Image (tube, protein in one colour):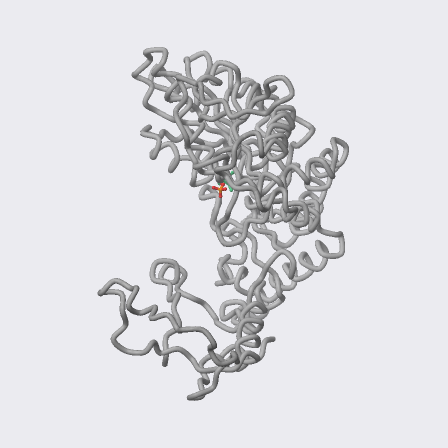
Length: 486
Ligand SMILES: *Cc1c(COP(=O)(O)O)cnc(C)c1O
């Protein structure tokens, strides 16, 4: 696929070759080295490659082609909502008035920026059915932690100190129990039924006087809508707990159903998923948190509010849990989300949900003949398959994911959720055409046939990428980030 040698041009250093040309110095040269503290001065010259400007350009361009991004191909990574990031969002985020404001500017000089944030809060209040929203949290997991700290502050303010447990379903996103732990709670798991939904019997068994909250995502990570959502919220409320809605899957219910109407007390949204913020490379993201009235006093400060015609930062909040992020959150991502909401409008956002759900169901039905479908019912914006049938032929889900790379696709999420054997989790999003969905499905069907007829080709994949199977843990734990001369 790629010309491997091109990216290695950086390695072919030629002594004396340089990538710049500057005129002779005609001012006095500063002795910069003498300005450095002792221990920072190199004893030997850095061993950098000696290359021309063109060499460098080709090096980085070749590296960029090794990347897979939304702008280069289909990215059906379940749970991550890898939908197209409209370029108008980028244009607006680059307006001088947004890109060049400084977080230490006086309120009176950033009225436009504060106005945008205030308006975004209002839209998110409407979309979620909550009473107030903070935009400070920088990601979904950060929103979860913030929301749980609010719930903690609420119970403490009521003198209700024995509520130390947070209930999470066994299909929960990994960040849910992690956030609960970091917020100082113990987590308890509630089982799913064989239909993939929360087991109400089990919920009644685990809920009690020590319940601080239940965390739930709806539709859940299997892509299934929790049909008994109202009863679930009721059971937890009866026991004096709060219900937390992980809104990362809002792409499936946007403009159709609202967490607030389902009885939820706290919700976080992933603006970098549902509202088209780019989220490659781990951020920056935005994970606003919405709450019902009884939790408003605890929200992080400052709150952006309106006094008359003026937007102000309200720090006068004695019960606030404090700041969770410097300044006002990841402003640029909030600008992108605002642009998205305004350019889509209410009808556009409704269409998002309809097409996201339609696309997922279309793919699920086409694939169901070739892969096991553990939960055979309508899905929402994503669905899970199981590679059990292929496993019997000696082809694992990991192999299928690696084989997809040969065809230029980003693989789906695999081995998650944990309660499905050989899980393959696919989320197409609404932004893909029927042709793209069909091409991907055709390749998945081809791979299923290969597993029967020629399993080695799948087991040994990928065949066309620059590198084969990596030790992903080692790559994450001990990445080599610096140029190393061979
Ligand atoms: C993505 C996701 C999260 C975490 O969001 P981050 O922004 O990655 O921290 C939490 N829950 C669900 C269901 C998700 O899909």
